Length: 340
Image (cartoon, rainbow, N blue to C red; front, side, top):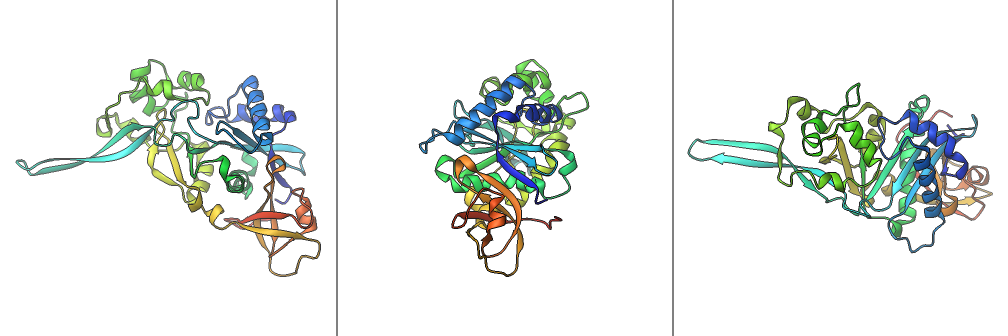
């Protein structure tokens, strides 16, 4: 896996992104299956990476994973600096209320969903896609976790709170049991239509039509109750990485399909807590080496790879991320063994 390179998206990556979006169209609304929209995303990302240090919060960053040996792109992932920058970012918050009657001696703890915009302003991890042929190795870690090193290195551009939406359950026809039970009743269209309209944009206009009062989960159809907080199969791999990082998956769900929305303070995440700076040296001292996620964090030329490193980084390894002797790189341990 030492032939994998994560880097910022480039203008020439459009055709590969179109291919990936088509392959992931059922699971990732933030990676629209639309060439014009993808071209706009590339342009916005290039501007974000090149922009001055006084970032506004509206920036979106897109990374691609390149297999240098095969000469092709095999994945992508992104960051939205501030969720709901142009409008409020809505979720349902899981809460439990107690209804009791002393006269009857009955007490019931009821699961409710409260429409909220608690995560407005949080930094969002978005657009995760990985070619299925690469799912069994550590490529997914590089694709997902390198974003956290980028955020750590440029913390003033991002929120101290990180969140990520995961796709919820849909059937073979693309219909969502949760949407059918809740959203469709107030919005008057089926789930694929609603997803197409949103296309990764703010869901505030949907929330405007939703009831502001709590939704009692026990009153929903059984299929919708079962779907609440459940993952679409395409979301299982990235979700498992986020769980290992320390994200909380119990508080919020998506207002469309009821999929879990995770969040956590940046400083509490495993990749950030265990990250350390290493110096590149031509005479790097010998000693024990471990597989690490290694990144050159300079914004415009951000690069991340999987590499075996010790207390220092040798020049040959550093060259893989465009670094030179004397440079400082950021490294964090992997969560599993790597086969080179």
